[in-house]
Image 1 (cartoon, rainbow, N blue to C red):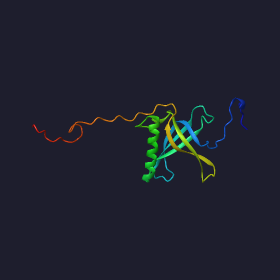
Image 2 (image 1 turned 45 degrees about the vertical axis):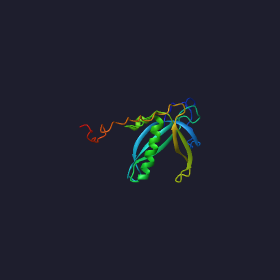
Image 3 (image 1 turned 30 degrees about the vertical axis):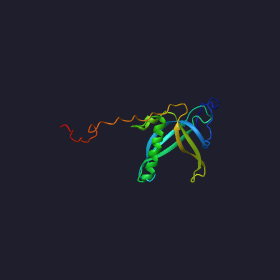
Image 4 (image 1 turned 135 degrees about the vertical axis):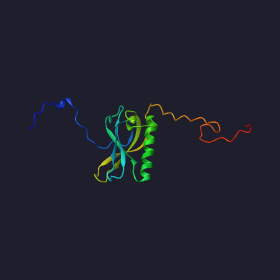
Length: 162
């Protein structure tokens, strides 16, 4: 037997972990970690997201896995496009570390899917957009064209007056 000094009336009971209803949610990325794939042939970036804002679902978690290192080039391409969408939404276009994506609001489109192994409904993120009220990230400024032969790595032809 364990001696407890606990008042359950002072702590909100744990809610069920049913899948979130399909819809759009404002979230922040709260955690990120590279993990080895089950097959051991690659790595994926696991992103943990938390619902924020004034909804009854605030504090709920969502996860996505981005197969950034994988022998399947299609899987890598999908993951890179998804990561690019996230980066554009949070305004960090060249992250050096996944933590640079943390605590920046974005909006996710969530659907429910049946997990074939457990038979339970789960969530999957289908899309990303800039958070409501957040300024849209500015595209990278176009670099001005250099005059012929300058800073292009090419040698200009001899000038006619030489």
